[in-house]
Length: 265
Image (tube, rainbow, N blue to C red):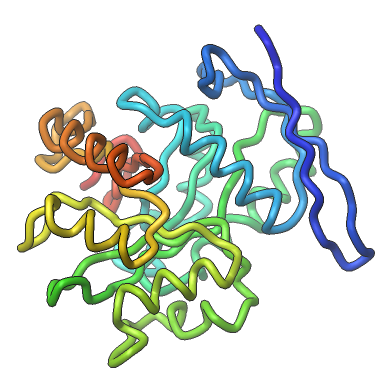
């Protein structure tokens, strides 16, 4: 199994430091097996974002929900899971990486991050998933309310502050271009959530979001809440084709609001 080393220079409080990020690659895809993950060392937002880009390049229809999952909610917005319970499930499932994307809030993410650090301290040498910062933000695109997912951003950056106040923004801050710019200025990646679930067609919204500067689209999504979870075949294919046409990352997520990370509700 070949390996690839990504050398990242990231700015920390002590200056520039080099971070070696080792990732297993099989046929240009991130190697994913239940309960196994190549050791990854990274520091701060820049390294985290670059690692996330590598992961997004590997995402396919089989990635979610047992390898990666980039859409889930806790009791800190409209979900039912406590962050500690969510974290226990993520580890039991064998997730390699994921993001908590509460609506206009990072409170659940922060609680979960603290829990994960404590877990790693108490389980030295154990395979731990990577938890990226995440949020889901309401925005206006083509006179349609859409949801934009932000990942791997620095929560302390001023640009993201208006969007993590547990309420939707208004006026200029509510426009998709402003939301996308704020996420990117905070060092993150912006993704259009469930593109085929809005009043306007994804054939219109994805090109418009690309013009607005979006980084990716939530390609693999289960629109009819099947059990077991699986991405909707037709919509996923259409979104994937549009992502390829506009040079966007593909992502996946269960959009969990219930009590299991393996389901939406």
